[in-house]
Image (cartoon, helix red, strand yellow):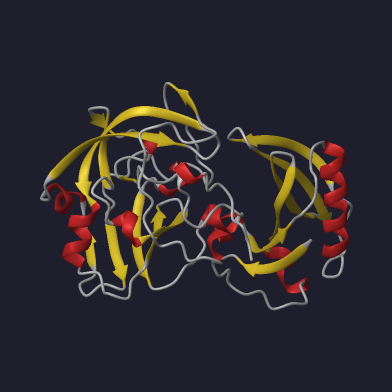
Length: 312
């Protein structure tokens, strides 16, 4: 087991200051196996914090191959969460979250996570169902940071960072762009897929062309109105299927599905398709977004089943 502490600014909306990412090499076939790993991680954590032994909370399947075992440890009135990820009965990674209230007790200097592989290349989508997925009839609604508003129609989108011409686009500005309609599947990292959703909106590439993305840009960090964020390699932002979508199956996108404007990136898992888009920041380096801070993959191609990171 090898664990490292990282600063996790993307998790500040959840009052989380740091995450610990551990590389595992253990058999994790049962809850007993997971608890043995959890106790080893607890021993590691105790060099930084006085915490209670881990208490098992639940487990959750992610796709048909991964399983997350969730634990909780307490330090006084504050809690640390621990997620142990196994793939086909083999432990891969574990993630611990450290709340902001305990940040000053950490005798370390956490750094930003740096991707091991810098996955900026484009993985071509395929027609077949990605591995580990199953089909359902309609998207399951997630709001990890809550519903930001019931009527977000007055909000716009800021394009900034490594661009020659920063943009601030209101709803009327987006209506001036040519509209594009696509049919695309939505693949959730938890395992479900909805086939052939019709999306209509503005091709993001057209907007980024107007902003004149600089040659040194490699990623886009995309934010929602709720404070959520996701990191996306630039080739996917420039994909001819990636939309700033305003309509879903012929109707304006409902607030619970991310309306009035959400990002749609069909070539990546659904957590990259940020709801209630408010800002896109072009960067020359990788930075974790919300789920990436919690151990999810830097790129997230469904056809390579890139659900979780493979650290160092």
